[in-house]
Structures are given as C-alpha cells and as structure tokens.
Image (cartoon, rainbow, N blue to C red; front, side, top):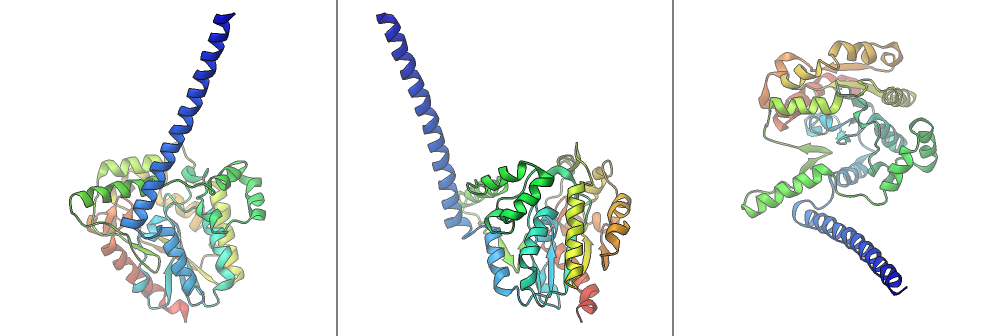
Length: 334
C-alpha cells in the first residue's frame, strides 16, 4: 500500500511539474514576444505600418480624389506625391479583395471628393494561397463588423471565427520579425536603421535585390497547389466594382511590372492572356471597369534597376510608373 501511495504521489508531482513547465514556457514565449514588440516600437518604428497609414488616411479622407488599393505591389508601387490630384495609397501587404472590400465599404461614405479607385489586378491577385486567412487588423479597426462576420461565415466557414479570435491576441508577423532582426544587426554594426518611410500611404523602398531563385520560390508559394482564380476573390472584386459604380466612382485596374524571372516561372500556372480572359475581358467585370492600365511588358520586366525584388518596384520604379499613371488619369478627374 505504501508503494502504491508513493507511486501516486510521484505521478502527481510529475504532472504538476509538467504543468508548471508548460506555463513557464508560455510565459517565457510571451515575455520574448512582448519584449521584441516594445523594442521594435521604441528603436525602429514608432507604430506599425498599418496603423501609421490608417491614421494618415483618416486625417485627409474627405479630400482624397484618387485612392489606390490592393496588395504590396501597389503599396510599394504608387507614389501619391507624383499625381496631380489629391491621391492616397491605401494598399496593404497581403491584402485580399475580401479585406479591400470591407475597408473601402467602411470609408466610402466619408469620401465626398473621391473620383477614382485604382485596383491592382496582376498575375497573383486572385490566387487562393491567402484564401484561408483574414488579417487581424481588419477586425481590430472595425472594417469587418459582427453582421459582416456572419455574412463571411456563410462562404468561408469557421475560418472567419478563428481569425476574429486571433485579432484579440495578435503576435508579431513573420516579415516584422525579419525586419526586427535585420535592424538589430544594423544597430550592432553601427549601420543605418530602416525605420520605414511612408508618404501618403506609400511605403518607400530603395535598392534592388533580384534573384532568380527567389522568384521561383515566390511563384511556388503563390501558385503551387492553389487555384489561380479563386471564386471568392472574384466575387469580392465584383462587389468592389459594383459599390464604386453605385457611388459614381470610376474604377481603374492596374497591372504593375514584374521581373522577367517572375514572369518566366509564373507562366506554368497563369498567363497574361488568362488574366484578360477570366477577369479584364470578362463581361461580368468589364462593364464596371472604366480603364485598364497594363505595364506587364517584357521591356519593363528586363530592367532590374526599377525593381526592389522579383515582383515589387523600388522607389525609382514607383516614381517612374506613378508619373505615367498620373498622366493617363489627369483628364478623368476633371
């Protein structure tokens, strides 16, 4: 009997130690993440990019005439200061048309001067590789309300509730973590720190790092095993078009350049002709699009000096194409 009691006692102690160990691991993890977040905000960035852009946007939303929306290709590729009309770059890294729709819907009635919405439509725009996530900011900032969560649930299922719950306890994103450690390295080596320069929503990125291997990995991540034209993204693209049309706002679709390496590998999954057939020339969407600006040309793709990486423009490229776009749109805002 004594041995039995001793065994039970030992088992209880082991369970308690196991539980304490798990709690301690979570506590250490939380302290590390919290410390990185605080250090990042103090040393490298006063606020997140998303927060800084939203605050700047809300100060001037009543005066904006041209609004550019989309993913990071727009975020790095449209320089509002190069436009003749009051322009704001309200794109977000990794933003899908689901997120774009609810963000625009949230603000559109508070933008009396808005005349043109620019939407990014390029090769990976409709790929389903981000179809099972909604970024927590779109819940936290109230862009997706509780009734809209139920609307999304009907087409996206339980994923919507999972993402809503995650919005209450966001952790540092992968790209933010990478930038943090890059800045720590720069700080230790007494080199300049990247604090992220933002102008009217445009995230300024200089330099150029074009590698064929990176382009291949990027394409595989975006397309391998994915649907190149996700039905839900197409649905929300259409909802954006109709919402703008109802408000007498012109819609300009835009395809910014991508490098020759990116175009080379993406052809296996989706082509420019397919993009036109499924979207740009499709009667379902075309009747709501006022103009399409296409810069997916070989001459641009081969000029690596205008690119930040395989599928994003750097500051030099962004200025060049912003001037081109502005010249084509100036007559449409009169």
